[in-house]
Image 1: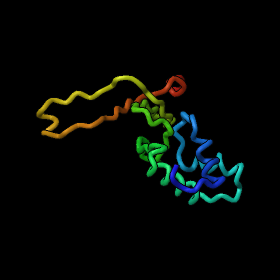
Image 2: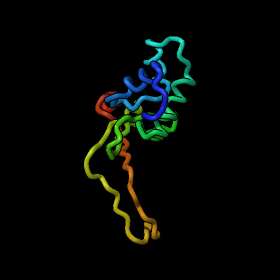
Image 3: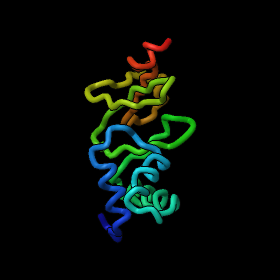
Length: 126
């Protein structure tokens, strides 16, 4: 990983490993604090910054209220529930096609598609 692996960092990595919930820093703090009650929120936040810098996790800004973290590094897109803020990974080809005039000679390296709507649970309550 290229940085010191403290027990707290290991606990954060274990919590994120395979986690499909796209947790916020607060979610991670609440979960990991059960095992390490003296751990500070600053430790979680600084660990997330290191993991992002080392390209071990992705930092998502899909939710305007808080950053979310994604351990899935394979190229993918997201569906977002506008009610409960649940984020779901979408894999497969969902490319954005831009005409030459729309690109304005911009060299497109990748794109990210966000599909927003209501998840099945929230749709039931509307």
